[in-house]
Length: 309
Image (cartoon, rainbow, N blue to C red):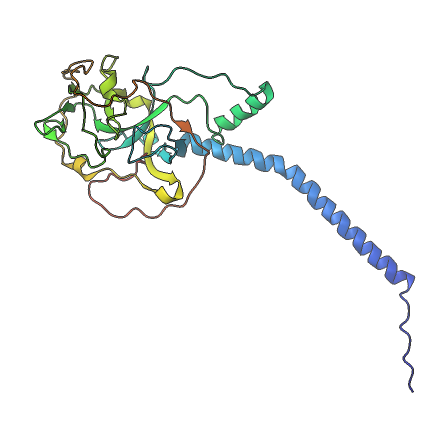
């Protein structure tokens, strides 16, 4: 019977080599961890700078707090607002859904005190400023542009519709069951201003309800933050916000330096119906994000470039 030879025991040199390799691997792992800790602050700073640039110059997210734009935009929807094209001189046009700063007296003025401590409040303010947290102090609204400078906007014609420069406007976006307007009005939009209305006419405290204020209910173009162009969230409602084709058939406006307001001023003539609260909750600036976009399908009467909300 042949005996198997015993395997020689590992010598001290081999054992030392294995131990050295383990020590080298541990040192390399510690260096990787230290490198990550050193780089993390720089990564965070770069991310915050990118977020700030996007929010300031390109795209901003807003959360919808009220039903004034239903059924086009619903409570809780997140809309993306294009802030880039105004830098190149683009102006809001009829049919655009725009986000704009409160012209004065359109929003709730009450502000609840923050329950956060000074440190947490300061951190939240930084994140709000760069667009990574919703802001508690935004003074923004969202409405649809019905008339631009020089347009005469009037309601109502013999069939109860809103007309622009004498042409009745087809409004398929108006909430089901709502009249185009339960207040009669007639106004010529001054230069540099817009006449805006919500799609849910029975609950929207829009230009019609502020005709007693400077500008006769119109909004300065300079107050416009941008055009909302897509519903980004929830996923089931993600879609583009296109300009209805009916706006392309409206006649051109007249000289915007003409008479400013031709109507009732306060819009006092009113039929029986649901009246909105004359002040609305402001939009909430949402968490900044980037989503993929598909190519916009070809269509008539939709102006390229500007976003919609």
